Image (tube, rainbow, N blue to C red; front, side, top):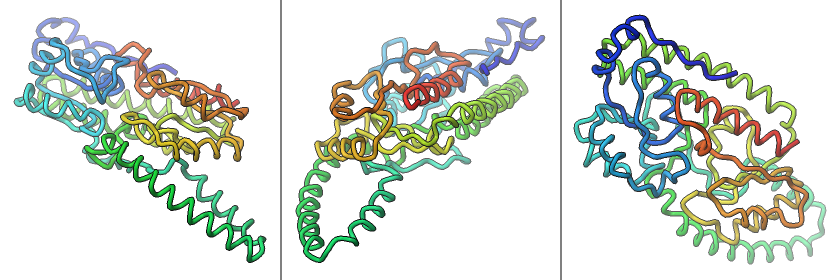
Length: 344
């Protein structure tokens, strides 16, 4: 299934430059959001992408052409400061007269909190199993275990506190995980919001915007069904991601990761966190450990050392994809494809 483009209307075809002249200038932060906006504007106009594919949203510096696009913008769509903390000042300075839509604040979505632990849902189950097994030990083993646990806890508290300090920059701009575009359900809500904002600025093309948004939602519904079917054969497998960016995808497709090597893509994981992940991979027989294109592959190799886990590369931004209306659907399909390839 491909993300189909809505055709040009007959009126737009005849009017050509006149129709385009009335279209608002739109600036968008990252490629996946640009794809959604481009889908709604398809046949009417084209949005400007501020952060090119492959660039880090956390640390990018606007080029003069990007700054000009932002300054000329009538409308700005961005995820929010949790993803691009530096962009808030640029928007305030350069796009003061533009209509600004912060997508994480749009009604109808539920932003997810960051997950602080290295190990996710299955961790509680493991603790329960360990507790049941622990009840079979004698009193002496219990006391010895409690003392060791206390020592480990003290050390871990110290190291985890250090990790929290190290990772603080990743959370300083909000408690919510900003990677919400990885949920097709969220993307469907955003399509409507994008159409509404464009229609307010450009009422003459409102019908086109809302028709495109409706078609885009249908395509996303088909895409979700396709990905659910794609993932079905590997649902009994477990995987670890490099950094905790995929919980919106995990929630939408009911396919949870077992943990993340790094809390944030803005900081390195602590030794304690790496040790926790290594233990999970070895003890639970994790099937797949996933890297990301812009991060150190040596860290993934360390986690996988001595295991039979496979590896693959997930890219939440679609760095190797061509920006445009079709990019969003391809991004999600690529994530599912990498997961299946790694897990099978």
